[in-house]
Image (cartoon, rainbow, N blue to C red):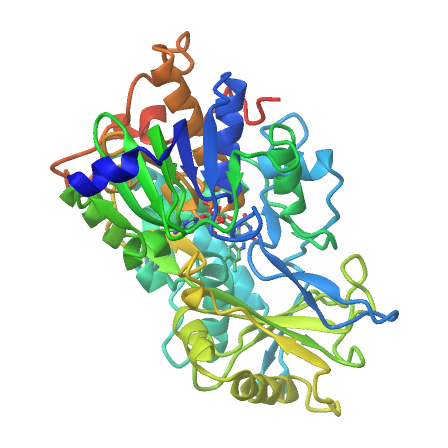
Length: 513
Ligand SMILES: Cc1cc2nc3c(=O)[nH]c(=O)nc-3n(C[C@H](O)[C@H](O)[C@H](O)COP(=O)(O)OP(=O)(O)OC[C@H]3O[C@@H](n4cnc5c(N)ncnc54)[C@H](O)[C@@H]3O)c2cc1C
């Protein structure tokens, strides 16, 4: 087209265009650098790298200085064990001295509308059923049987929270939704359990909460600084990609500011929310198998609502406070104290987490409306206290953030690995990476980390006419990714390979320093 011919001359030329500067974008660039491909650019919407690892100043400390709190990713999850595989995010956290504290999920108190009420035995009952369910999910996966939803998987294992048993519903929320952002009804049984296993059994069942005042994204900025120098011209901040033209020969990327980049390959790391929303235009339109995959998976919203008070009126030694609302499941259910030894002691900060429809609800409400509802809950939980109004209050609106459109992805019931592979596979020279493209670690920082790394090294290998891990029959990845024009109902166990992203093998070097 004449228009294209005209703009072509002005496009910046590069070998690889990395679209997005979150964890996946940075590890993709890192992998290219390690493979001696230095001719790349990173195009990032915001004025900083880090993506969904995003902190903001909030409230104030004794000296009047604001705290930094995490709007997005907060934990390093499944940190790893001595001698076993290590979560690469945890390795970065250690390397760069990120301040974190062990998150103790056993340190939870339970409440209902009348205040403290000990129904913690229900947590034990869930855990017992979960162990049984988990083994069953493994059988379904390896024997190529039909997936279910997590609710039915848990029910068959003995966990049957009744509709009006609100304490059991609160425990159900705490045990499933708090991680998945979706209810057990809305979640894949097999891949919900697999995801949980792969992070918490493969690495370890320890989560550390990041309380570092430089923000969690400090480690991502540090990682980037190992190959990007100050004012590196390859990093384009404040650059919103609006249009991606792709083929088997190359990719052209147009940005809102009128600039464009022409590359041999591109990697989009945009969130599933951005893709679902059609916020970026693709020409030609993405193929049917890709569009179907984009709409098949779910983008959840996980919202932390922060309060600072002039005192810590809740038991400060307790990390988690679980509330069972008498009417509505998911109603301001989990309160997490930061004003606790090891975290931000004496900060008088506590936050409550809501997900999906409750997150959408608070996004539509004014801050004042939300504050009022949440304060009513606090007053029910602590009826003997005279609870003051908060001195600071804030929450993000993730579903409305034009660079994220949600928090993180989840697999719906009746999903197969092949369906997911279509989310992950390249379309011509356009590749896809990020949290959502990880079949093993979706929803996590380390999922994004591995996916960026993998796309970067696969592209470098293709450009250099070689295979990734050429010497290993098990880990070898040659050429572009596989997609499935026609999906089988379920995925045979032989699909669970490196090339389909099932990257869990203790022989993988998680941290190619
Ligand atoms: C509220 C919340 C809580 C979470 N909690 C945890 C947790 O405790 N532990 C954990 O491990 N994970 C957690 N996660 C998930 C974790 O944050 C993500 O998995 C990870 O940050 C995703 O990285 P990414 O590189 O795939 O995507 P992103 O970080 O979204 O990076 C994509 C980048 O693309 C940019 N972009 C988008 N659109 C455009 C455009 N049009 N043009 C140019 N650039 C664009 C974005 O600005 C962004 O920087 C949480 C996420 C949220 C939101």
